[in-house]
Image (cartoon, rainbow, N blue to C red):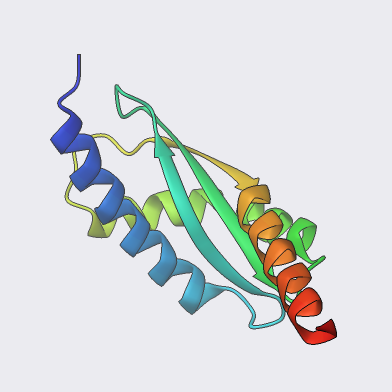
Length: 113
């Protein structure tokens, strides 16, 4: 069983490096934001949750990330100083999108009062 503190530290390192890679390599249209990382207990798999600005461009972001997954892994190998780089999978962060929608609804309700 893996150490939970190690997974927390590893997630933080990965999140920072992946966000840096995306910032340097991706176009600004759409702007891709890494919102969360779900690291498996053994550290062999990482599920990366992303969102985009503007909304609706998530599929473009996923295409970019999947095409550049090898470059991203190489970047992590060079900069992460960890023994085993996890397998990276990408997913749209639906929770963040729902939260933003709820914020919009609250603003509309408050504006109509």
